[in-house]
Image (cartoon, rainbow, N blue to C red; front, side):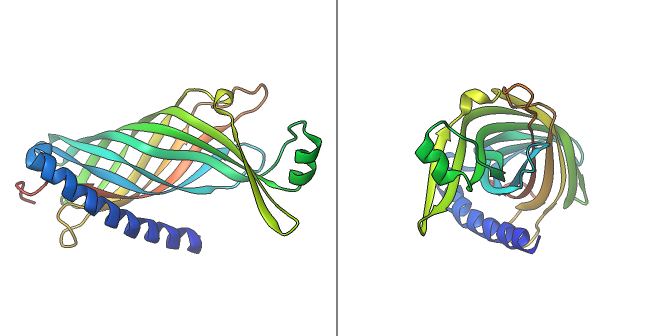
Length: 235
């Protein structure tokens, strides 16, 4: 848990640096037209701790995610929060490898570790409620579209670290669907309307096409939201 917290803090600092540069570029191109009194637009990203529920004693895996968001005001401090996580990976690690039918390969990797990395676009549609315009909670459905998937074999052989990546996208469903919810805080002094938060996603879909195998995605997300072009709207 301590390593996870440290990783999340480092990822947020890195994201802040990257998205600040992106904010300057996009703001120069589009200015404050990206935000209105009823809509807040910005970038979101951070650390994603992902799991494959019910699968082969797998362990969580850390990935980074990045995307954009919209907060659409519907009434007072109530919003619809949506957007797209453009770069988002799910999966897990710590699983035993399986044989591929090549005697040399199977001998070298037989004591190795398997990591599953599944790349997706995720679109949440959340009800977002703020309190004193700072703290907020949000929850709702989230849909995913799988783009890539790899099984990564890793081992140590003769003092060297070896890795092999196998394309397995055809072994997974194209769509994922579940629910997500979380809590966050909009800062007041660090950067106007920037937000930090934590959320949890639980997938309902068995994403494996392999018979008699059940895999459901879940993830714990530590994120930062950075508005773009926001400046005219008072807090």
